[in-house]
Image (tube, rainbow, N blue to C red):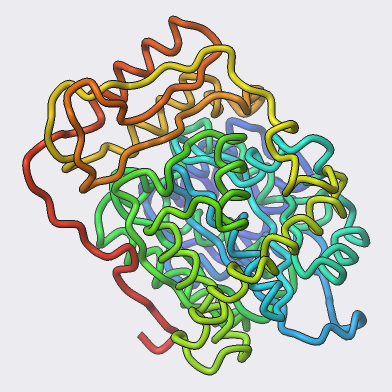
Length: 440
């Protein structure tokens, strides 16, 4: 086969065979496809899409490009579950949900990704923790899951290696927003992890890849259909991403917020609502909770008792991070040299937030990537971010910028000022819009 002919066929709208897709995935994994060919293939899929059969072929081929984990030999006393998000701004949910579910009796081997476009990546957040290894070998990964109940890591060389390369190239070639490619990318990692159940958080709004509801529904349906056809029970939730999730954006700042949340010191109400509902769906899917309502109660108990925070600390220490992360959180994260407030230009109520613009502002500060090989400054970002519905006075802070230089801080202040709309009245909606199951 010739890769350029396969690219041409997809460019012209043809449906590719399982053999053709498998050939392209093999070329991704062994490096025989050039970066230009990978980018061209991604762009062809972006514009022409893929049938459900093609999505299944692509997902299975990516899983088959590496190893698949098995948990049966560990005699775990609970189900192996996971949650995944399509990405958002200020989305530190994984850092909270994984230890909650572990504290309730589940086992969470979470294989996460880095930032894509304007959205933050869980691995970039964890990299801000000194010593934390996001790339353990398979044996250590399994051991940490067994002992801590959860482990959040990145793709290893053994797990879905084709997707690892594809993921990085998509990030810098404007092909992130493709339902077939996102479906295959997410599910190849999850199937390789040997899961018994998955809850998918599909975000919609200004800060999500899916800015319109129909796209979010398409992705949710695609993931549920492909995952269940591959033998992995999966539920999708469509959730709001029309503003910052929580009050911090930026890698170290979000980890600090997550730790404070787990310790029940500071808990944003929207974030609490989302993490408990996601946890509840996971617990129900794994037959730990009888109903989602029971699961919500279990999640609250895990937070209030300190059991979830303890699981997070156990995971961090087992993966090389500090053993006293809960009690000495302030001493482990470097602080940005410049911290400046973003002052409201008028009095009123926060009625709108362009979350995408906020995410891009973090990238401009150095907290995200413009190129696949860019280094990230974990110190930069925003804290104390306002929420839709908050009352503000003129010249009161709506956020604080953490930057390397005064100039960068001033540019970010200008961007945030334009991203926040102040008005007189707004009605806020739910954070969870819809749940999709296999029979829908």
